[in-house]
Image 1: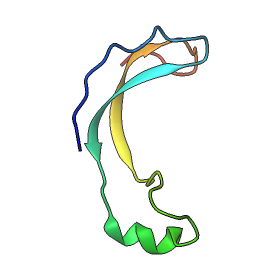
Image 2 (image 1 turned 90 degrees about the vertical axis):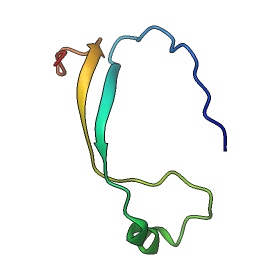
Image 3 (image 1 turned 45 degrees about the horizontal axis):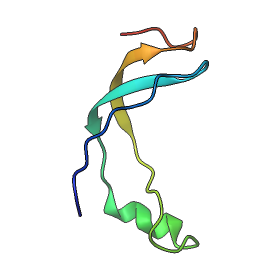
Length: 61
């Protein structure tokens, strides 16, 4: 795989930018997603901080 850095476009109304601090990577979750062919987006728990917001429900911080 490659690590690619690029500039993010400006946020649109209703969008937020979150800096992820912790990500839960749980391989056992694959068993719950067997109906989806690989590759697919794996879901998991995350902890992060809102760095920018265009949504009044999610203030920066």
